[in-house]
Amino acid sequence: MTYQDVISIKPSIFKHIIVDANDPTLRDENVVFLRTLLRQKGPMTVRDIVGEYENNNNKKSDKTIYRYLGKLIEARIVAKVGKRVFIDEENNIRTETLYGNRAYLFLTAADIHPFSENAEGAVLLKRDPITKLISLLLKKRFGARKTDEECLKKILVKRHTNAQDFLIQTIESGNEEIYNLIKELEYYDTGIILEVVAWLGSIMNDPNIVKEIEKCFK
Image (cartoon, rainbow, N blue to C red; front, side, top):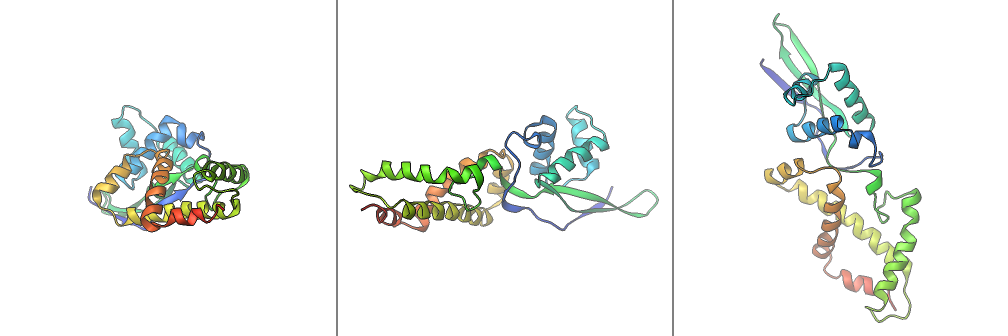
């Protein structure tokens, strides 16, 4: 069948999703298989998806696939991203909906960092005690008698924000090899990547970060 895919929505680099890490959309093996398909193969129709399940010896009906897609759309992981245009056997122009991931990298609610600008509720409440502990650990290193925890907190929030920006910019300027590697990642790998890039980005974007932190210790 000859067809043309018309994509109206392209995936963003990075997206926070509100579902918990134990949500079925992230743990159910059938839904995980669908997420993996869309990540590795790009936008697909329900017809494509049904065929992939059959090839995996796990036959599913159209109705079941629509149910899986509904869960992923509700979680804002997947979206209707375009249309496949084709000519049927009776020479009529037909279309089918294309479904695809909304982003290359995802963070779940469980992965939100206490120093993220998106932190709220119980996660945000962790920010002050963590800042206090960090300040106590660094106090001796800087030979300080007292610390300005608000000063340190602002730097840590800024560092985390810069890390996300650095990660997005790095991926956007990347090549096909980078995108292919991203396709192989699971969603829970994103937090690890972000944490590593945070330090690299901080050093590369602001070599004087140690001096900046030192100002919080007197």
